[in-house]
Length: 273
Image (cartoon, rainbow, N blue to C red; front, side, top):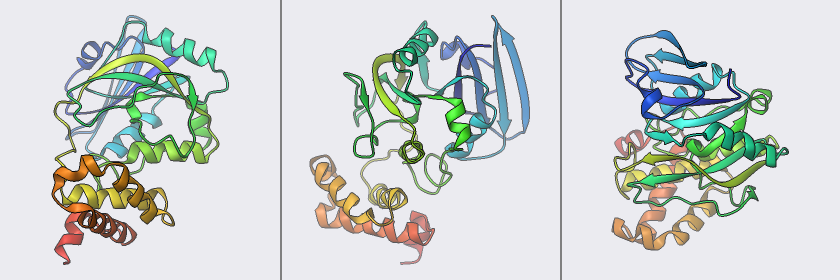
């Protein structure tokens, strides 16, 4: 059994070919959403790969299935379009050796085709509520015992296949911080990822801003509107291509806040206009 275990959220896999495609060199759990329910196991080169195939939907559901079947000391949250570097297990173990107080680390990932940009770690820094929410889950390595003690799981309302398009990663990090977990950035690249075909980002349309409002309401009901305003002001140049203007964007975000408080998706909200 390897100390590091990769937890992959994937769909419609028929075999274990992702082991080679992703260059996985440790134990792994594949949470595989498809049209059947079954469990497969493969032992190869001293490592064990588990494939949990279910007929469920939603990335949060899928990641939670992987967490429920995890057994490694250190868990790497992964997407199925990643490819790990050779020797990533030793790199991760060494990082935790350098930071024994860390419950979770945020590593670097080189990105292909990411038009929205990705924050890269240049040094080791502890994350807090004011600087922790610009990192995807696929950069996280976490001590399993700390997750299970809480317990902490991914939101079922946010992410691909869920009611709202994105934000489950930030909510996961928020919950780790709320539980007192110590999270640090670490300036080591452990994988590359191809995001030229985003599964959820379809441009700065009305739904994007509605879901943004819903996300900030999930993050903090009391501070939802100030969080929307700070996001709008920080990204006003980036959002300019939407054509909505500042007032229009803020209006769509406020609709998202209202909708989230009522449990309404964007389609439900617009249908009731």
